[in-house]
Length: 147
Image (cartoon, rainbow, N blue to C red; front, side, top):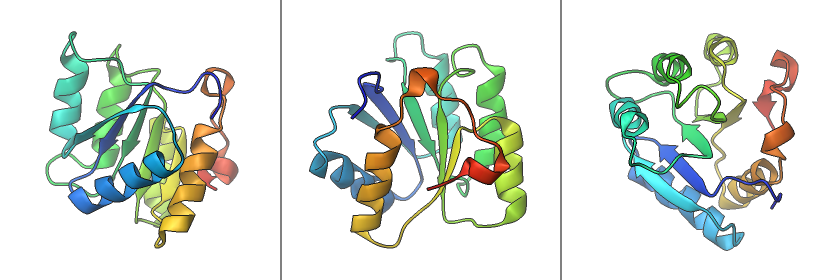
């Protein structure tokens, strides 16, 4: 894990199983980060408005949730002072080019398509947490879909 890694991770997905899968991957890699689970974009926006909530170092955001979509949520986050510089990783099953374009244009840092196996998820999580986020530059659309 890189030395500048976020100590607090927000995972936003309405599917508890996805969260548990992700949490298990973090734990199996011995990544030391506090992990918070939110089930909607509304919860995420409320979290970011709460001055007493710990600052997230990174957000993993699903696109397909009830209420605000992930793209709408991404745009709202980037409008807010507290959320404007937080690395946001889109974590979704969508492979639609429009979703990828909308997320890139909306300011997401990376676009991760949810893997089907635990070993692939573990590799993706390891790669994401190896990134030096303090010096990371958002990739062009060509390098946006990760890995």
